[in-house]
Image (cartoon, rainbow, N blue to C red; front, top):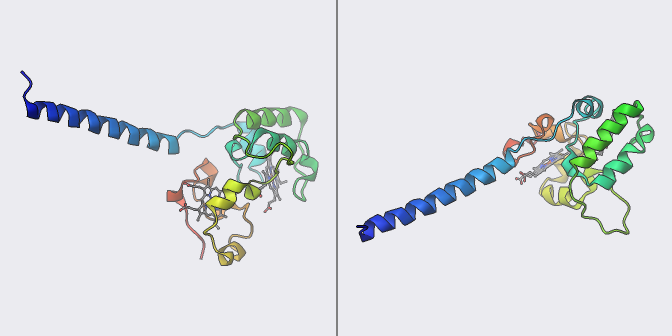
Length: 159
Ligand code: HEC
Ligand code: HEC
């Protein structure tokens, strides 16, 4: 027969198992495999880190992909087949839109509300550091950026 302390132990064990699996899930989420595509990695990682698809909504990627010949002051155009494959990959793995329908899609991650919010504690002095150069230079601070890891545990601010 179950006595009181066996029952308490069973309850505690259930509770702990639940907590541990919740923690494991949260951890999984952070280390969830990032979407990858070879053509994207090569073409869009040639001049800067290949920015993860989830960081902009689909309509932004569509706008970026339709203006590659005039891409932030440089020419990033490529053959049609590659552009189509990359466009599909980006849109399929895009983030959710947070814009009002009347607004034009943003072309820059660094202009999104979430980016500004996540970086509101970075000082002006840091942004002006020549080792950073540009907000778009994620790899200056995010050491795992090349692997799609932007975790707060993997940041080193250049001095
Ligand atoms: C020929 C070089 C080149 C290639 C290739 C290239 N880019 Fe860029 N990209 C740039 C430059 C230059 C900037 C501006 C960087 C800055 O402001 O510091 C930029 C900026 C961006 C930004 C905005 C970054 C921000 O948030 O401020 C996005 C998004 C972007 N590129 C996406 C892409 C995608 C997608 C591809 C592949 C289809 C690609 N780029 C290929 C040169 C390139
Ligand atoms: C000057 C250094 C610097 C640059 C450049 C930079 N970041 Fe960050 N990033 C930070 C800091 C600092 C945080 C805040 C970490 C924290 O919450 O403790 C952060 C937070 C983030 C977070 C949230 C991480 C988390 O675990 O909460 C994401 C996502 C991110 N950055 C993406 C980017 C992307 C994408 C770029 C390039 C387009 C970029 N960052 C450029 C310093 C930088």
